[in-house]
Length: 561
Image (cartoon, rainbow, N blue to C red; front, side, top):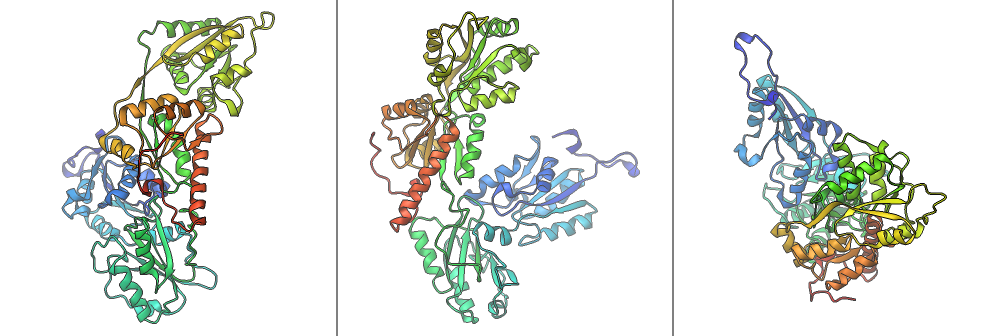
């Protein structure tokens, strides 16, 4: 905890400086951590204490985890279970000690939550507070389901709490107003997690109150998350359609929102959100978190849930002398070219430069080549614009050799090339450059060793079909993942970055489903998305549910092809 957040006794007689406590009531949104407002993120960034969301269940646990990434490292996080039902008192108590407290609420603090109670407690205690509005499920979830609350010719939307037993259903059923019922599965405070008597009673009550049985209605569960499921129907058919969705493996779960009105079209096509090509797919990326960050963002854009598992640990060379000579040679003009074959090679050179107080200016007069777009991007981030890259369709060492100019003694004042790379790299580039007449200094910039096995639940998910797809970005990721965690299950889609990686995957008994059209992780993610979209279209055309690979019947381990 930083010094300002420690316990402080007020000075006697009110003299001297004091640390004033503060409470922020922050709406965390309906389930997607990216829907947190900028103001909410700023409040978390300054928090000494966070009173977390109530028990989210396993589906929303990652939501809480992602929200806390906005906090300082030394923040104190209090789980609601630790408060004994006195969450407001705990928040006020920490604020009395001079701490900045954030109390998180699902959705909006004042819509469906009891934020007003904490605000009143702060006023009574003389504690400064602020209310940071959040996106409520009542308005955000219909948008994620593609349901307008005020479509043409509808000028009113009614939002009610389904747990209230005194609702006037006849009034709510009257007219064309859109109706949003929060907590419809638990009308009596029960925790009903499946389509049960809550929804059924609600539909029957509305019909009994005078609403036509043909009125469009829908239930959206786990709204705004990659577990979202929308079932659109009518008041008469909704319960049966929910049960049918459960039977088809849609895994409909709470929390839920009930929608009724003209905005519910009854269209069986998925919404813009649920219709993304990899919606809800759990995708394993066998790379370190740093390496996988850009790929993970791209996968999330396709609707997937990426999970990185390091298969390789990058370590410094056993002896630093080679790298020291290489850096000295760069500074003294020993090299005409430097060829980078990986992001790790760029990182290794950059770190060594920083140790010596050097920066990208030391590359002045040296030509730089990069084997692929990720490596080129890493160089640009370092402040270096590559002079040579292979064409998009052949981003590899061999592809770089194809475009590399032969050594010409009249045109090239220096014949030497620096090649910083991994200790286990192939000889393709080195031998190719030598064949073009260049002298190559092949330097070990970093060592790659097999990473430790992932946690047992991840290993079980890999072998048991818990992942929908695995993206292999190199032959080494295939070898190392199988070595530390076992073979992916036969239902898991195997996607590879190129022919060499595909060959290795088949050697390990894996059937390759997707091969990127060019050797880049971006193209690999796009190829997987196209595969997912084609699988969905095929299922819809056959009149079958568009199941994720992990939902399909598990059979024998896949055969190689």
